[in-house]
Image 1 (cartoon, helix red, strand yellow):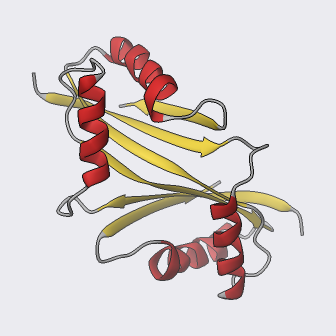
Image 2 (cartoon, rainbow over the protein chains, first blue to last red; image 1 turned 120 degrees about the horizontal axis):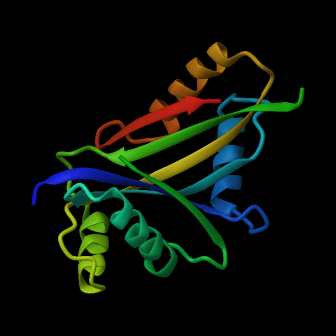
Length: 83
Length: 83
């Protein structure tokens, strides 16, 4: 089966969780002159090539993979789309 | 000035660059039973809160920040939207 679809997944720390990497990027940007910026959140981005054309079946599988393997649901949120 | 806009930035390794993290995720997914998946690409996701309402001015600044600070243009591509 050829690769026809792609899952695009964004994993971010939950709002209540400390995000030291985001803080670091924020203060780096401010030091570089980008003043006035608000909070910065740093997360992960994944793209997975998927075979076939059954979007709904993959949606279920990708959701499960995000929950079980790709993210840590205790401290992270995820969102994805398949296109 | 209040925070009114958000820049959403995706940074991915260029296609020609080795992506060992992507390879690792791909083989982990295959071992967990998600057979048939194609290549996996792992990148970074950043969300930056921006003050004011001047989208075009920020678009220029975010583009510059992506190029100079947030990504490594030799091995990474970036894309962003401001909303």
